[in-house]
Amino acid sequence: MEIIIILGIICLVLYLLAKKLRQIDQKTVEKRLEPINSINNEYEKKLHAWCNKNNIIFKENITQTSEILVNQVPGYIWFSNKNVIFCPDSINCGNPINIEDNIISIMYDKIKYYTKDGTISYTNEIINNSKNISISGAVIGGLIAGETGAIIGSRKDMNKIKNVTVKHDETHTYIYFEKYNEIKLADVEGNEFYQHILRLMPEKEYHYILNKHNNNHHLS
Image (cartoon, rainbow, N blue to C red; front, side):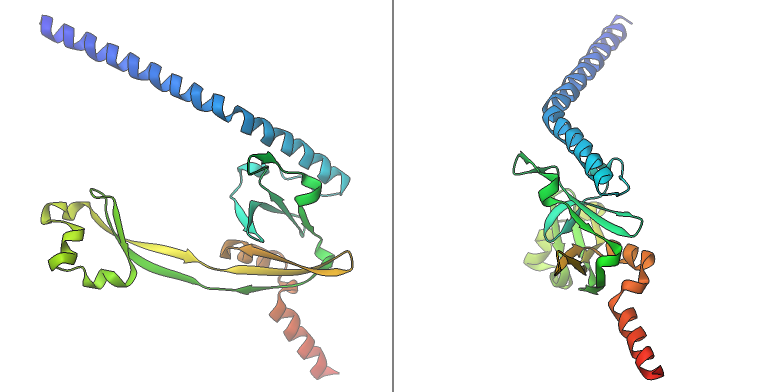
């Protein structure tokens, strides 16, 4: 009976110690994030002010949305009515970003057209969780036995091996728009953005404009 009580006390002490360590770790993480959170909060205030100045509907918590690449720069993109706004990450190489110099605002009436390029492909990958390896693509067919079989592992590892499908999105949306009497180009990565803009403004899609022009030409 005494042994059970002692073991119970030890378990309780270990539990409280682990809980305390987790709290310390959480406080350490929060402390380290304070400068970044401060910059993000200041950046969002400046972004709000920029939106008011330019008659743009401000998107709250923009830094918490999914990141996207525009002209190979990571940031966040949203639509204000049909205007496209790209906001780069608030920090670049450890330094705060200047909104006025880096934000890309594409007004709907200035969009000449947009078009899509690239493809979406899928590959199968064999993952062995116990050995932390991932083997993909064409080599999978050869991993049956012999030396290559050793890469995957023995029969006892079979329940740790998974065959997963990996999506490779190489889609780019190219938006051609006018600014300062020049034609500019915005390169937005990812099929999700293309599907979104296609639903929002199909009339600006290149093939739609081309077909409309050809139909008008035939009627005239």
